[in-house]
Image (cartoon, rainbow, N blue to C red; front, side):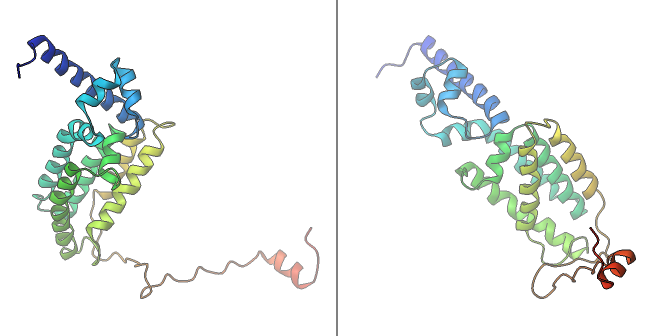
Length: 228
């Protein structure tokens, strides 16, 4: 089979880059659920071109976010080299939130199991043992309570990231603010004397204190008087 003419190859490459740029911009603001039709329309191409370049949505997501995923993996690898485990965890979370603040689609991809691709699975497989090692070191140093796991750290990531996504429409700069709050709250490690409350059957929360009504109300009630 003969090779396509150079002009056609150049057109195909140009269309691919146009679709990638358009898809990234749309997903950065609207998330991963942007329809192929919307991407093709915004790029000024046909649906046939869209499906020729990216037959499956996974093909599109891998092409869009492979470099970003590698960047996040690099954050985890660098954090693992910190001598202070708590500082490494705080730095990693801050960097991850900052890059996700720039793209809602990337954040959804990293936090969602339903959209998980082979690329994301590889990222989780690489990052989880690094984060687990930092947590283990932080526990041994008395910086975290025993029993903290990577799942707990992931829960914090999901909670903060979800707030960022929910606030994009009415507070576009909320991501930067949340990142700053995270940095501030995690900048100094917990002291060894910090008392942690574990929410399980073995460590129930104490009952809330009983609130007493004001003396005038109590006296009126005892006397059988109506207050209203």
